[in-house]
Image 1: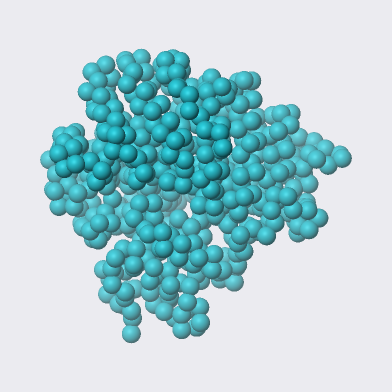
Image 2 (image 1 turned 180 degrees about the vertical axis):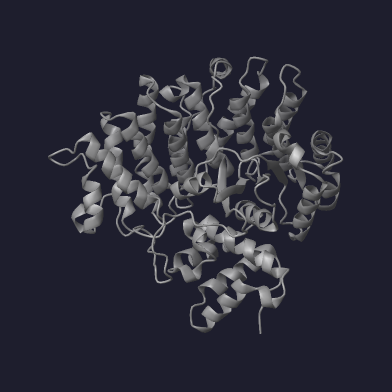
Length: 550
């Protein structure tokens, strides 16, 4: 396998960074999971389209139809939709018909309850449209949205998802040269790649092959700073994973550090923050050498000491995430760890968050935009919720902030627009931070803290055996009875987080209020043990005793 080893020309890249426009779209996919709650309720609503949700609904996984399956073997309803955008036919559909088919396909891909065994068959026709280079931005964006849903679907084989990567990268390279991409295009592009990097079925060699293309500076992707920013958002999942080649990862680390070493007053802080986030993600890799960790630490210290720039909330948070991660790495000696921790304390600990820090080791940060809404009761509530999380499982950093712009499903967007939903939290895997939305329209509850901390457990604390067992139970789940709620069916991560959230909450409740445990025990007695097995696994992940209701 070819590995990029040549020295990266930092100066030319810096020119791009300095002239990056202050575009409005955010790195929404930096947040691996979102939590959406009904206004006035602690229950999360479904992220799927409105469909029949009877408990007899079933799923099949992995996909039985690959991207190369014969279309004639598909159900008629799928054939009808795909035929509207399949340009390999002798009679090519009109662009209006193609857009109609893509919109119908999007509705299917936005529905997590049906058709998962057939969705991979859409990949090749979708990629054919991108490869053709003949269609409008609207059509291409519909294609990319469909591919993003498919790449993020845990019940579709990684092998099938990988077949879209070349088309994605080639399409973006051409789009850069033609200057005909939009913010929506970039968001779907990096979402697809992030989901593919996140899929455990994608091997280290396959991840490295994709990344080698992305970091090849002869690629047109490196000729546009906005696109380069999107590339580095996609690479966050690569940097977190240990299923990657260390040589390529170290190449990216050296690039990130090089960028931080030459920042000045004209540098764009949005993309610089992305480089810091990449380093925060990389520090989670246990294979990094002590020398690399020290080099990263020194680069962050250099940013903090740089008098030419003013660090805002996001940059400060990213720097703190790097320092916190490194200060807990046993490859550093005690003096080095204490020095790093002291820098973190000097920068992040204040009178408001000092008690929580000293009691639990969790750093609670407050974004200036919501500071007026964070009173002593809010901090006390956070302290109580964090205290209820078992030691060793608590989040490193909790950020209290306004709701950021993130990728949501159609049903979620509609619910928010109608005032039925609020975005209440998310887990930022790169910065290892639990983000909680502070908003006057709903009260902060332990559900939200437990839920996002559960995502932290999934990414940082669960053992390989526990992860494999959850994968098995996820695939075994064949009806809504096997899930906490409909939202749990979204993907494995949300299945796990809703279960762990509920299990920890019920741990502190009297038996009469442990409704999920009661349901799990009743189903187990009826020879359906899946839900109870999930409950027991969640208890093990938290490290709490097994509960039972007599």
